[in-house]
Length: 412
Ligand SMILES: Nc1ncnc2c1ncn2[C@@H]1O[C@H](COP(=O)(O)OP(=O)(O)OP(=O)(O)O)[C@@H](O)[C@H]1O
Image 1 (cartoon, rainbow, N blue to C red):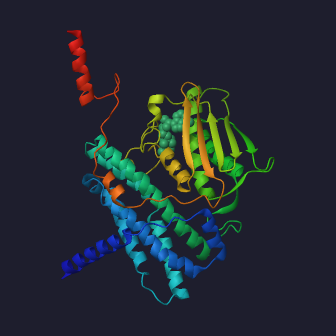
Image 2: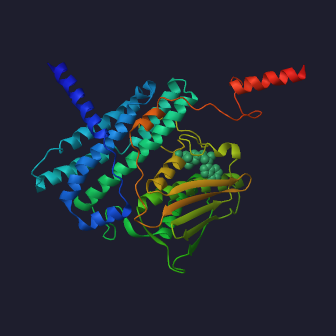
Image 3: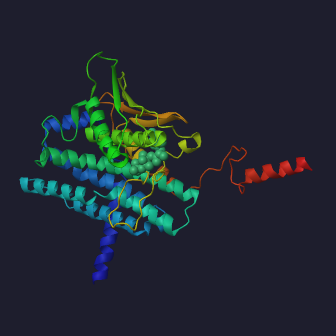
């Protein structure tokens, strides 16, 4: 009897997942978030979210199901998957409600808060799952590539889902304590204040760790309204996250490059520029830079030159040293069609560029879609290499083997 109920439940879940994943998520622009927030119509928001959240959840849950079986079996990945299933089911409870009264709206708000809390540790828990896989299985390049592809989409989907939940709960859940903000968006986000805030908090950590830290110099160049502080319609917490990670990296590089005993460190230079299309923030450090051969690894999840935290230390999942700073920060920048890039001069220093869309109508959410094209990424092999160079290939690659035999003939 119980088994029959369980089977029916599973069948129902996969039917609903299938149904909702056939719809594409509907990306919103910052302007739409703002207009929607200003109209503050709770019923409209409820009606939008009870469809849009299952669509966004189903789209990414279908991709979880395509992950390599070994990874799916890891306890942490299993845990994350269960959180998604639970949350998906909880939202569907509101699917068919006809009479939308105060009580139902309150219940909906509470459900969203519960889901947000449940998913608070998704990032480190998924990271832990990947570490569990690496520690117990051989992970080849193809699997590595699929995991990277998935993590980018999975974390981006999470940013978008949290954005919707935060907007609704802040606007209608009585959690709004900053009257200037509309939900979590600041219509007049002062870029330099966020820069200084992120710097101060990174400096605090750096001082604790090294007992020293480089200074900050900020220059603004408002190309549109010269002399006026640069403001943007943006989510300050996203910008803060990105800048905080970049400052931590820059400070660590500077202090380690010059030595913790050095008296003076070259300051970190920040340039904030308002152009027609973008607001650009350039963070320049003189931390010795990154070699060109390491450059390609910087945005790989788990690439870090910091000591790795041990899994056995604690049951909670720490993030520091996992090498998640840059890839996640880039997702935050890309979420609203901005970007994050790094250029470096080995032996000198690094420039990090954060690009943000300056016009709120153009700052659209970027969200992953589950379809044939994304599905193929989880089954197709990596394209074989069509360039070769000395020292650049594995000795077993066909191109390398052919090259060696030609060389052998020449020597004969
Ligand atoms: N400004 C920089 N100068 C020199 N190396 C850098 C700089 N920024 C990043 N790196 C290199 O890139 C690596 C990855 O950076 P990332 O921010 O992703 O992870 P992390 O700082 O090592 O760990 P965490 O996940 O705690 O942020 C760093 O470990 C460092 O080797």
